Image (tube, rainbow, N blue to C red):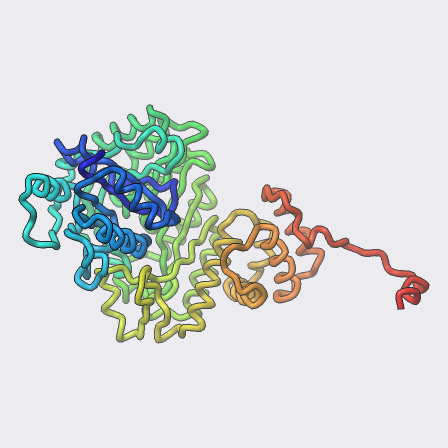
Length: 496
């Protein structure tokens, strides 16, 4: 039994919620009465409600995000039907803006907008003492970071063994990119680094080897970045893996000197390029030295062992297909390991909405509010680009097809992959649930027909990739004889 339950729906089991653990760590005298129960999107609403009720809580706090708001709305609706006496409190970025138009907000008892670290515990104390807040929407108090208790001790041994551990050395972002929720921050706030590194060392001593920093601007403060990299270099072993999100045009020599010391498989950078079109960058208030960013990407690829994950966004205001193609082709030329082609989503509260009418930007009316069309890209073309992004993730980002990609992206990579993407969809009418053997066969047929690559050249590349893929089922193209024996004249006449 727990008087207070903190819960959310994660995209996958390996994602351990940092936000819930911050809330639990700062419950004060109520921490012993507080329990974290996490679910995944695949859990049925009825199963979730049953599990929550088994804890017999008085208060349930939900972490609401763009990826889980639909499912949480269903859960809260069921809760209010079967257990209306339980107080439901919402928090998280999805309910921190434009609250009044959301069904989940209507169903809930309270909503805490913005920072909830201190405000959730304060509300719970008032509710437990029978002194409820008069207002439903409560603006979260933003304390100093030094006043917030760190949550890392709440990662369980099971979390450490089986899940990604999310950590942070700073909050907020000084940049104002209009598609990003962090554009609403006034600045970036640095945590006490001694305090953070001490907590991370305790996790490391408990066996943690995979750390994912959620800082928007890891390399904004170079001195802090240097200390963090040195911390992990001192603890380097074959299992260590650290992920950072970095500013692409800010990679001074102090950081480079440390980055080159990390072996392959231990360091990953997520680099938000988003667009290489300077006019679009200016339109969305994104400050970026593109030449410097490309120089740094080239250096990371050629001089370091870091795995680089580069982000592009489809559907930004003022950007057409030719501009997207240019950006994609430039990144292919820079030989980045992973190019995440994302589709613009209108996050609640972000300034991107100011372009809606001027650029005829149309979004889905339900989460995740994905762009449907702009004045530069019509709906049908946007759907082709969405499929391009999906198939690129299956083929380009999977790391399974290095030899085949050389054929697939030979000259005009964007145009060739879009041609392949169109062919795959016309052939299968599917973007998901494509087994790996089937994907090998689609690549073979698509390359040899839609892109006119010679059969034997295609077969050789795919066979090399198949051997290294770990796939156990032999694709159909490998079962067909390369050079079937020609029938004799007598055999042909007999068949007739």
